Length: 442
Image (tube, rainbow, N blue to C red; front, side, top):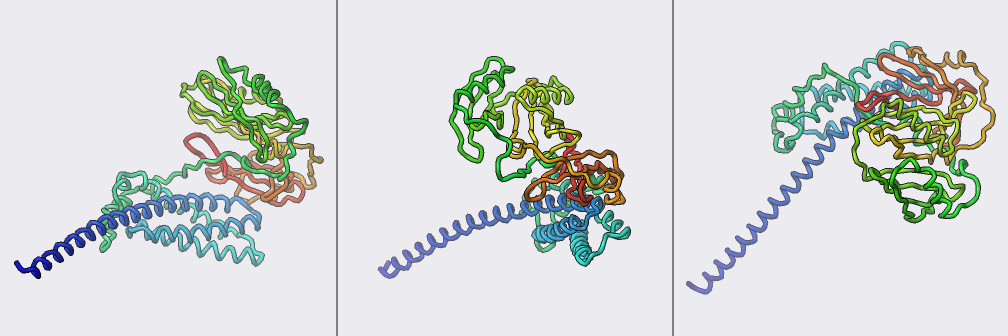
């Protein structure tokens, strides 16, 4: 063979190697793109489900509020979320009738919420026919929410979206078939978990609930010893201090069944928080009422007086309670303490008193310039009032407001509507949500 022949063979071999390398590269890149595409599809499904849950909740609040400014805020949020939901919907590689119906629904919802928003901005009020339309839209949101959520829980959703979709005919894809088989006639409420009314509110930028002298680490150690005497066979270890918004001494408490992390403020020796980890499951021995009594006794033991339970959540062997300061028949929601009880261990194994530490202080007299009956006239006409409670609530941005808390119902829903006891203006509204672990609010 001539030298020229060897050169040609060498070039061909080299080209073959390059082409093979390029093939391997493109195959790997194709796999990467398929994975990215798969993740994008799944994210769109999950985000669409979250969008529909938010829409359902907002529509139910819209029916229950009678305040134009709150209606404006809710309608604006519905309009924005419906557009976001449509964007997630358009990213999905499915095109069956259910998806088309949801798409039509979101378009209708977006357009109608925008028109209502314009009416309210021009001084209008929601009339009876508009409330009936909102009720219909709310019912439709539950159906759409159910369809998507149930489909995510089916076996069809566990399969590869990319592999099951025929891009030339989306209606015949495995994903369309799976979604078509979801029975929306069994529409149920979304399962949402929240943490009680005003549980994350920090009203004051300055800390008002702490006073006294700066204590030493030895003083803090003694406080931990005194507080956790109900644990048997425990040891306490000082693990350092924190100089953030709250300056604290930090301790680790090791008991037989639990390890706790305890924070004591340097200013005044205030028990700021107790967190548990490395927990061992023990079957519940206490019912929820007994656990609440245990939590109340614990707060009294460590020096918190006049605390009233305002929210509970039962989670198998653990129960959570929110306590607010209570005085002269007024509930002070800013002064909130969260307590966690292990019903198997029969002990308090968690607490968060940061809201109380921020906000608790002596306040001026409760302002009551409008009667409960007159304030009640400002509620939405669709609501049925079950009870009323005087309270102080955090404002949306900063500060506090004196209010009446009206517990109300509409259809199967329960709401807490907060009207100013000074002017009767609606300040806030939350809805009770049934979950597998109890009733929560949002």
